[in-house]
Image 1 (spheres, rainbow, N blue to C red):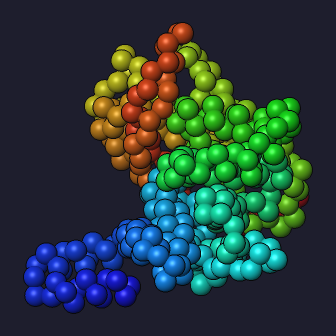
Image 2: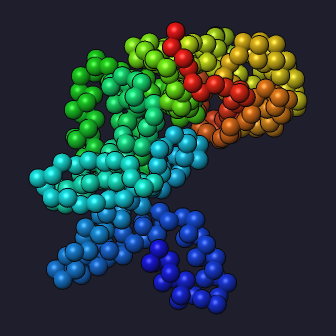
Image 3: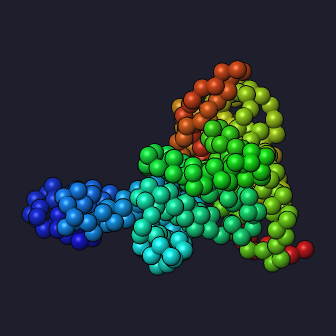
Length: 353
């Protein structure tokens, strides 16, 4: 905020200054990234600016993690908090992270190498903020694989130079045994992600599950159901175009259906064939969520379908995403459009039997 005030003062009276000020207020993560570059420059000027190096590392971590969280929250709003703040501690104090005042606080060791701190900070942020409510229900290996996979995506996107440190510190130790549950989950998440279903369907269903309050939950049954969910989505994500298969997942805790819009014989501007199917088969069955999926060029059809279902379902969000589609032996990257419909009047509290 001090940097914003400074820039605003220098450019006061000029329209470009106002525009820049508004832009920075809407993108605070960019201020942190730019600040990190300034601190990095100062740290290179000699020992008198030695203190600036840790400032650079701090704002580099904050800016890049906050930027990833902001982008993630647009299509996958599953974070307890989207902002992070780094605090330095001595080398004899354990690294930790926790939620406080609308932020994830990362306490990292001052003496650790810079890239190692980024790897630790990224993982601690994801493990603390992602699906915060849900993690009380699922198994350790399920949630550990989720944290490892999402952190891998964060580091690959924001700072690829740190991948080696993340491999040494986290992935290799946890996935060394390829037959371990964590390793198998991690591999399956990658396959589901290739099909475009990891963030918008898998994490969304886990997030919906985390929002529910159980009178007397049975964790073993929830864990088993999440395993079924993972297997179900893997089958859809790896299916060949045109292949028939069950797209309904109706269980005690998760209840949703995937509707794939695309067969030329059924594709009309109003999507009436799909609307009739949903109204006759899915609405009476009480599915809590319907995921309507098609190629990007068919997004207008999906919008019409959503409008026709407005009495029973509300549209949570829509998103554009890349997916690997399989046509026989050929795999092709395509842009898809997905609408998430949530049934109206869902009860949050689930009494015990």
